[in-house]
Image 1 (cartoon, rainbow, N blue to C red):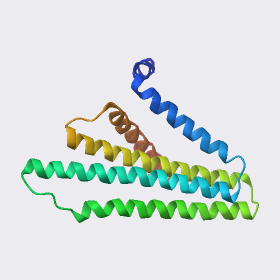
Image 2: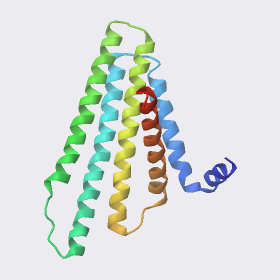
Image 3: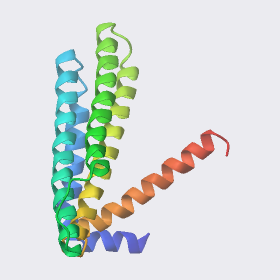
Image 4: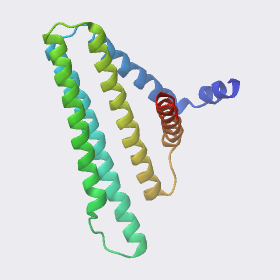
Amino acid sequence: MKNLLLQFATHRDLYLISVSFASILTTITSLYIKLSQTTIFGISISIWLVALIINIIDIHTGIKANTKEKKDKGEKFTFESGKGWRAFEKIFIFTAIIGFIYLWEREIVRLELTSFLSNIFLWIKLIAFFYVILIEIQSIGENQTTRYGYKPKPFQLLDSVIELVNEGILNKLKSLLNI
């Protein structure tokens, strides 16, 4: 534990990421104190736009990385539909998830049900959002590795975080299913 704290304290380049992440999460949570259909719509659209922008950046860096791979092999760049269409599938799936959760939240507010239910949907939406963002940023890091031959420190840290999150999710699912 002491080593972990010392490692965190010596990585000043990661402070900005940490402060930004905490500030965004606090702001989103504080906005949900006063629930209204307009607020829920605004947050859902904002989450969707951020995910879309990061996905577009991932697509752009992916094309650049694939172009470099082809150039290194001496081939001409051609669009590979398997990789390209996967990006659009991710956008569609995330849009559907955010849309369904938004509709459920809107109904909870309209029917004036307990705030406990709206908080559950808020956390489901935020967890899905942050997980998708983590995966997309990890993909951007892999594209950077392909393009430049090394992975910057924030992306290396992100790989460790994603590995821990995936391991935690698998352990939780195994315990729920008694495997």
